[in-house]
Image (tube, rainbow, N blue to C red; front, side, top):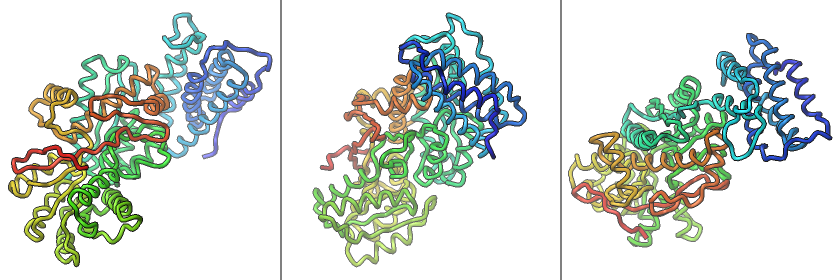
Length: 520
C-alpha cells in the first residue's frame, strides 16, 4: 500500500524542520522523553493517516499539536530536527504496519482518540520526572503512556506461548507457575511503579505452526507489552522474529540455542539461562577430564531439530577444544520432536563400532526417560548426562516410575542452584510457591522462571514509571552485578544479552533426590 499521509501533516513536518535558527529552547535535558514521544505519536498518526475512514483533519490537528510541543521544548534546532526525523520515520513505520496488516484501522482509531484526549496545558499536568518540562510535554507524556501496548495506569500484560497440550505440557505448566509466583509476590507488594503484572499464556503444543497463531493472538488480541518464557527452540525460530518485527521484548525463552543468542545480540531479545553450548561444554570437559573417557567413547542422543542441533554443536565445539582443533566423528543418535520413537537411536548405539561409555542427551524428559529405559539393558554401564532443558523433576519422576536403578547416577546440568538447597533465594522461592500454589512441589523449571521473572521485575523498576520497550531494553543493558542470591551475579550489556553463564552439576540417587556435585 502506498503511503497516504495528508498534505497538512507533511506541511507540519516541513515547517517544523525549518525552525528559525535564532530560536532557543530551555536547556534542560528533555531529548530522551521527546524522542520517545515522537516514536509513539508518529506511529499512531502513520496508521491513522492510512485509514480511509479516519478524517485527515484529525491527524493534522494532533500532528500540529505535537510539532508545537517539540518546537517549544527541544534544547536546540539540531535536537528538534533529530526528534522530527524520528517522528517522520515512525509515521512511515505505522503506515507500513497497517499495509502489512500488523495493525488495523479499529486500533488506529482508538489510539488516535487517546491522543486527541490530550487536554489543554495546565500547570499541574506534568508528571513527576527527573527533569522539568513545559506543561505541554507533561500532558503528552502523561497521556501517551496509555498508547504503549499492554501498559495501562494499573497493569502491564506479558504473553507466553507455551505447550499446555501434547507430550511436553508439563514444561508449559511449570514455566507458568514460576512466572506467576514471582508476579503474584510483587503484586502483593504493590506491583512495579503501582502497576500489577499479568501473564497471559496461550497453548502452542510445542508446534511451530501453532506458535505463529498464538503469537499473533497474544500480540494483536490480548495486546501484550512483551513476551516472557516462551518454550522451545523450534518455536523460538518463529516467535522471536515476530517479536523483533514489532520491537517487542522477547525475554527468557526456554532455550539455550543460538537462535536467541545472535552476535551481536538482537536488541529486544534477552536471556537468563546459560546456553546449551555452555552446558554441553561443561559435560564434555567432565567426561574427558574427570571421568577420563576418550572423546570417541562419547555419543549424543538428541532431538531432531534446532534444539538438538544446538546441543550437538556445543559437544562438537568442546571436542575440538580438547583435541586441539579436530572435533572428530561423534555418534549422533536422533529422535523426532514431540515423539518417543527412540528405537533407531538404540539400534545405532548397539551397532557402534567404537564401544560407547557415555551419552550426552539433548532431549525432553519423556524421550530421555524412554532412551534410558531401552538402553540400560542393551548397553550396561553407560553414563547418562542431560542438559537442564530436559526438565529435571519430570525426568526424575519418569525414571522413578521405571524403578530406582533407572534413576541412579543420571547426571543433569542445571542453570539454577539445587531446589533442595537452603540458600535465601531457594527459601524465598519455596515460601512464595507454597503461598500462591499451595501443595505444588518445587521444580527446577518453575525455579528458573521464578528467577527469570525476578530479574525482569528489577529491570522494570529501573526502567521507571514512563515505561516503553526502549526504556526496558536500556534498563536490561545497564544491569551490572545484580545480586539475586544465586551465588553468581546477573549482568547484561549491549553486547551480551544473557544474564547468567553459570552451570551447576547434579546427579540423581536411587531415592530420586538430586545431589549437587562439582563437575570441574
